[in-house]
Image (cartoon, rainbow, N blue to C red):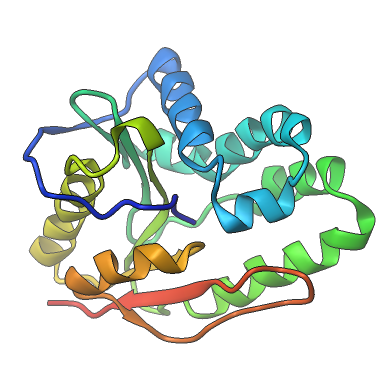
Length: 204
């Protein structure tokens, strides 16, 4: 998943690892704001109260392994956050499934599960870096945060000669990813869901 309107006129800022509970809490808060108009996040939680109540839990579950592995990153000014999974590391689906089961209506749960399952289908079999979440708060977009975070992670991919994978929850972001070497491999749409776009960047 990734938030809307990451593309920007690129301003170079340092990228640092998110470490420690207070930084994790701040990163989740930033992602909550970044995804407030994201098509998939707001499809899952269309009611504002439900969104603010449950999306922090969802983001904590999605990012837990990344925080533990030291693979979650932010810009030094704290305005952008990227949650990567390094090669060979897969998230624990249990906490994520629990959040979905507890917070999303039964009628929509099957569709949400199918979207995540189909997006997972396109992840490379070989070791790769997976960009689970990337977001910049709306007030601070178009200043280079998203591009800086993406470039930083992809440089690591290139040093290791690894592919990278993500799925874009917003069509507006696909051009940014394409400029950095990703290609759309399919369009996924399940039931009432918005379209999502699995994207792969081959190893270099």
